[in-house]
Length: 361
Image 1 (cartoon, rainbow, N blue to C red):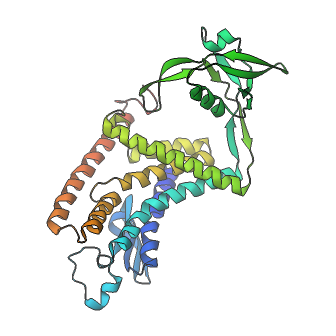
Image 2 (spheres, one colour):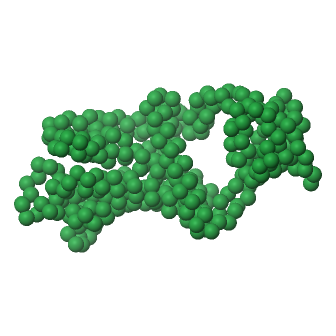
Image 3 (cartoon, rainbow, N blue to C red):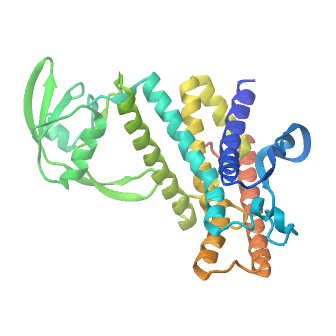
């Protein structure tokens, strides 16, 4: 039951946010909105208000906003063209198209802002949990249980800061201020360049000293202004990471077996919900960012594909021909159907145990 309600909350929430972006910008620009649907297929329930049909449809795996004059070849009476999407300038149409992904990013930011403001900022402390045998840290005399309080005279407040300073050293010697049993003293350590795997599984070379964190956390309470900055930073980090992930999939660095569809989303939503409401909302924000970037990919039928056509129209001064549009849409359908087959296959393979769960080799 937890899996079901959390899946419905996550999916319906993200769809509503995305489609509301298209809807509200179209309305603000004076473009008539004929339908706002949560789901695809046959209409199950809804109300008509202000000329718009707000409804729930049978297939709950998406949603759409239908605009008046959406198709360029629709016959529109001259007096009605002011309300028609296709008769608006390219910049107006681009604003409506891009609003969906933008609202996904704004929604993620709002979630992070709420988490930081209500809960605080969780920080991994610079406490050492283990020292690798034969490592530069062991040679320097560092022990498990030590706390790093400064690097080269600059105070340290988190494990991330320690990692950043070590990476930035380029292998040059570092002076660490260590706290042990209430005493503070300095140790000189020389980082050693080692081959590691990054988050995408790529082998990289980076300086390390051979220590791991003790997993000691503290939660720093933050004011609204700090929460705004932290939310912006976290949103941008995940946008950048997600974009890189899509690029790595295209490059073949990240296998397509890591992709997942509705079943995987439902399973992960259920797992996060069991860990607590904060985890569920964090997952929702991450998924919202993924949805925003996915829709910005230049694939026909997606928002990014529409933006590509509008960019071409803006540069050329005339729209893409109907024939070219139809060919592009057929290509887009092929790409999206192929993607759907892959993610559903991956979902079923994981469900039946034919493939390892995400996060395992």
